[in-house]
Amino acid sequence: MNKEILTKSGKLKKEYLPAVYFDSSVLIDYWMVEGTEIPQDEIEKEIKEKSSTHRVLSLVRDILKSHKQIEKMIEIRKKLLFEKVKVTPVITPLSILELTGWKAEATFKQIASESVGTLLIQKKSKKEIGNYLKKILELRMEESKNKKGKKNFTTELERLISETWINPSYTIAHGFSGLLLADIINFHFSIDTVWQDPCTYSYLQLSAADILHILFAQHLGCDYIASFDSDFKRVEKILNQNGISLLKSPDEILKIL
Image: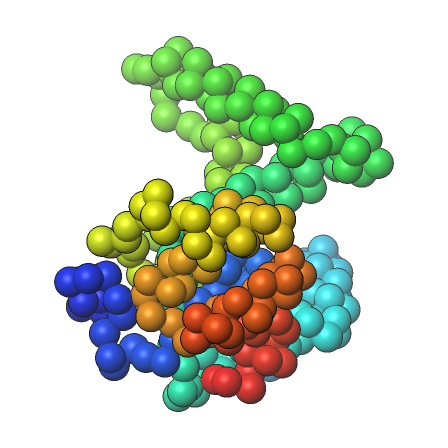
């Protein structure tokens, strides 16, 4: 796919421009509202055929959808899936990496809170959560060795990893639907380059991942970069000088689409 959308230098081909680069903060919100683009009458029909538990979950879902930002992200998703838009939304492997980390932490906390209580697990740091996830992987690897030649059945550890890990094929087909996935090829980040804008970004306390998002957006030839991370506001003027407009809210994204 990327051979068809990128030039030899690694930029997006003309037919995909103008483009807006979605950083991980936007991608996570977009991914979270997957499925909400389904017409309400279809959802209600499905709910009638399910248990009261599913009806409760649907009620919570409706309440969450009333939140303005979530409501706007649903609007963005519907527009990208069902309408012709003027700007191509692009994501890269970097955003997918951050989504994977976020999903693992968020899902583990959700599951753990049902076991040991929300207050206890919410106090855990990212490093502590990472250690718990490492333990899960180690236990699963050991289990896998001992399971060889035995009856094939799904274990609790397999289910736990399945819950906390992103399913690539499903995510690409559904969660990322409406977005253009672009490889980063022929990207050069030299010593000479680092002393220029990247150093200023770092000086203004942007993380290395945020700086790479900006550099990737420039490399692909994007006219816009969308981020809900307030840190980006500190470098907005520099972005503008480099020909990139910063979109800081769902409303601003909708406006250019």
